[in-house]
Amino acid sequence: MQLTNRSKNVVNKEMTFWERIYLPAIFKGMWTTLKHFFRKKNTLNYPEEKREFAPVYRGWHVLKRDQQGRENCTACGLCAVACPAEAITMEAAERKKGEENLYREEKYAAVYEINMLRCIFCGLCEEACPKEAIFLTDRLIPADYVRQNFIFGKDMLVEGVEPEKRVDVTVRQKHITEKKTAVGV
Image (tube, rainbow, N blue to C red; front, side):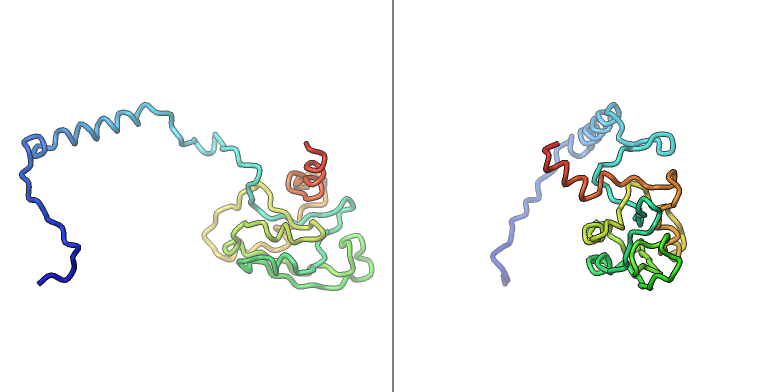
């Protein structure tokens, strides 16, 4: 009884002498190995040599400050809404009297956390931010064994006040790149 019409005729052909001793197959494999042996290596000796990143690489997030050292983030929540992985959480608070030198607007992010294990580094938070407060830099996220260490709070995200602790994101800023494309550079 035949169930389908897709049956194939199997030929039980005898192997030749050279096929039985496998020497041609072994020499063919050795030839392939020998060809690869003399090719240029693709690996790097990592700590000594570092690979160049593409200019569009997205790494560690940073919350920017303005020229006076005040935080740009106004806790509008657009970055959290735009995040497809729901990695960003924040709590807004009102600025108190005497904190004008810390925060730009009346409302600021009292708690701002990014779960780096959930983040897919898509850059939508960067695009959604109207104040250009959050940017993805070219820095790598350090490896760790504890999951709690991958929830980055404001202590790890906000850049320093000192000029040497500032993070240069001019390549990724919208208003600068839009001017370059408008001029035709």
